[in-house]
Image (tube, rainbow, N blue to C red):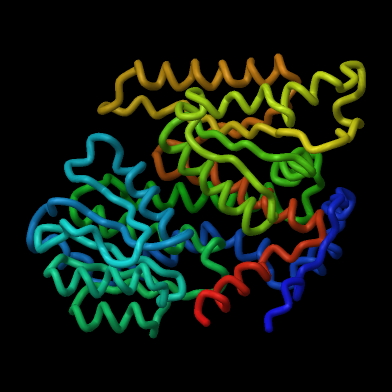
Amino acid sequence: MIDGTAGVSGRRDPDEALLDNPDALAEHDPGGMLRHTASAGAQVRESAALAAEANLGVLADDGRPRAVVIAGIGTAGRTGDVLATVAGPRCPVPVIPHRSAGVPGWVGAADVVIAVSASGRSPEALGAAEAAHRRGARLVAVGAPDSQLQAAAERARAPFVPVPRRAPARASLWALTVPVLLAARTLGLVKVNEADLAETAARLDADADRCRPTAESFVNPAKSLAIGLAGSVPIVWGSSPLATVAARRFGDTLSANSRYPVVSGALGEAGRGRVGLLDGVFGGLVEGERDIFADPDEERPTGTRLRLVLLRDGGLNAEDDTDEPLAVEERRADAVQTLAERRGVRCDVVTAEGGSALERLASLIAVPDFASIYLALAHGLDPMAVPAITEMKELANQ
């Protein structure tokens, strides 16, 4: 019999003072999620080196594929979203993230399947690798060394990139993503060069330093974001396809690390319906009762309220982009900020920086990743140990 409360601990009201106590942070983070998250830049470098040793060049022997399927679940599945976004609308072939077991029925010898699993044993990645082999599709696998996934790749005589597993998958996004991008580069689908990887790693290093535990809340953007989100229902919207990937990633980490319910997605989709949340019982209706003369930095709202996080990407003025979609995205982002302001719904904005799509994506992911951990710690939650995830696996495997 599984005890439904085993390992469940923490407090409903956040302890914001704890965030400026490095010793207390370390005590509440026994698994080292902050440390693992700070390794993102190192993950980029290590995975690039491992991919370079994996003989990915054989993928190009049969020329450009008809389509590329990225098979995985959870964080591994997000690598497909990253690839599709970095490849962009001018990618010469479809890039299709696939989160179910096996592969789509149309996959065959003309296609490439990239199977991704941090543990190397997820049914989705294993099923995809085996199905790709049976159907004669080109295969590359990314995951833990000496795993079932590596064995499946060896049976198919396919390249395998061994990514050492040192943390939960959600803290290994960059370790899993870089080999996927480099496999796609081998196929001629993305333009990601060594400078892009180096600049992305440097960006992640810099953001890890800004978000370090010893940096106090008033200068630490992740701690400030966590304090703003405490006690709220977060809504995270991305202004562009790239920012939407980051928004959905933040939704993942807020749910798993912080145990917060969250609405995340594309701002364009929100404008067709979900923006109505700003008018609702957790938005404008309750915010209208707030004392407008109160100091917003001193007042702790009573009751559950929305908190909007807007991830904005101003674009890169790339040759294959037109000004109109970018202008539309910018106007839409300005509009939702104005709507939130009119209703008293507080809004945090994270703006992309960097000279490549990959670096800009990193700039939108790094601070929110840390914020989800600080929010968990403020509630006395261990961001690494999630009892419900463990129980779910036990119950599903009975």
